[in-house]
Length: 510
Image 1: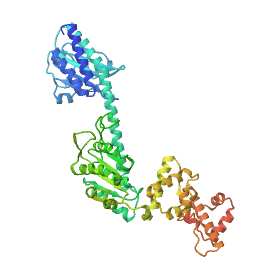
Image 2 (image 1 turned 30 degrees about the horizontal axis):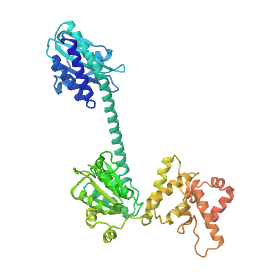
Image 3 (image 1 turned 90 degrees about the vertical axis):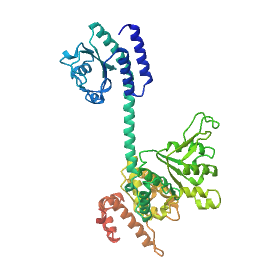
Image 4 (image 1 turned 90 degrees about the horizontal axis):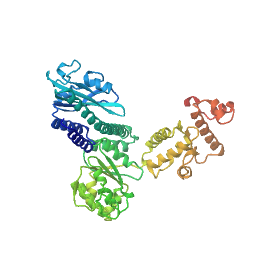
């Protein structure tokens, strides 16, 4: 180096490079080495970084080394000159590497050359995070010290930037790992094997999910509110090749008429009052993945026209914009409305209906899935017991009778809410009839516990209710008559007598 002015100019140039390359560590390090090679006559330059949580250094960037030579450059702390610098945190100057016994030449880039080697540590918060080294033509001791001092300044400039970038990379990797874990969890959650329901109608739906998942076909899921239409849409997505990309859900009925176009297609800055910046719509956010349009029957004719174009051409313009945006999106729509009636009334476009109805799936209401009702109730019992940290054992006979007799106008969603409430109000780990919502207890269709036959006398009615109370208690206490007696606050002799008279077999409840 000729003078201090040249050194300052060079350090300024390197610092500018560092500040302009804050998110690409490899490009940053390579550019710094290239500057030193062109301005200082450096023969080779090497930057190593420490593997997080280890005492191992790997070459991250180099000048004058091939990829194969870089791959050889792994050093343990204390190993060779580079490892020694990392271990001690002190620079090393070798005037002639051909005469050095410590120099490893691990990269095999040097053939007994008469060159000098300078290596300095990159230190951040008193921790060595890497090294920077250069090969230069052999020169006098004073010049070598000048080069070494310059290299120390470069290491100081790099230290903070490299540490920040590494932290960002680690955070990004951690986030990607977390996202991957969540994707796997979602995939498992929406696996067909984990879906609850064994009735014929549901088995047919599982088969339809398998048939359509691998395709790009548009799906229309139909069914009453609360039947689980979004669950089916997610199952299709997470069993498809798009499962690692976005699943964007839009409730069309919940969006005001004046905002739905902006929500779906985005808007440009100044497109309307309040549009202070450009905003991507749901279709853009779902690019590469799946968009779920719930309650599609509620959208206006104007939005129907734009949606039809997206389905036909896979393109649209943002509100207030002229640029045509093309997307690769799988569309799954759902509705609880009668779309055929909408077409007859001219409130729903016929051409849009046929674009959506490529692969229809019809979800049955819960009242038509009687055999699944208790399966679902038990599933929700376990779900909310775990969520609220409660030890829930079972659903009582009286509660089962009420659940099975009720017509469930709110379908699976209402059943889930009902069971959640029951878990919260249960004090003994059992869902009793009185734990169920008032809608089930007061409904004309439901009755708590024993339902007497027509013409039964008072004695028969009392025995019927008594029998159910005893069976419920025996289930709770696993057939233990003594425990039942304590629970019902009577004697074991009376319990045994009533069990025998009513023809109940306690052993069947153990």
